[in-house]
Image: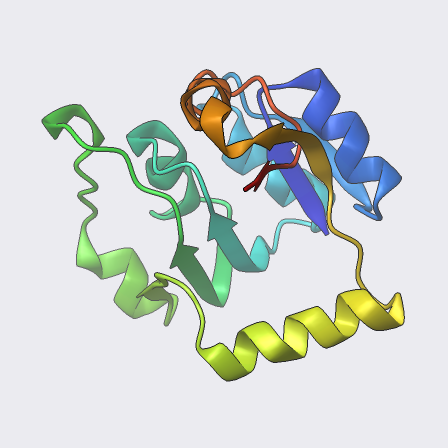
Length: 156
């Protein structure tokens, strides 16, 4: 597992919870070569792109992107605005047999299974903070500023 973040705190947390390697994603132009260096030039099998920033998505695909042969790019995060429109040439995707997959969420059964993993201790959730529901906007502002490390839980 290679975790990428612009935040030092998030990279440290990723190592703490089990990432094998971390990479500073502040300069997306160096990301593909850094990932390929860590994978003996192969690239990775799966990328979960959770931010939706165009420069990071661009770094994942292409002739020299971080995604390896038969790799899957799973788009989870998104940002609005034309500056974040994701455009890629199909030729590297075809030649390297790569896939781009969108993922919005999970089914109720997936949620129940995930809760079971947490209850059994097989999986831990990183919680940044717990706030009263009345402070929802404060939590949202913290998420928007990328200053949280983990989930923000609202308590009714």
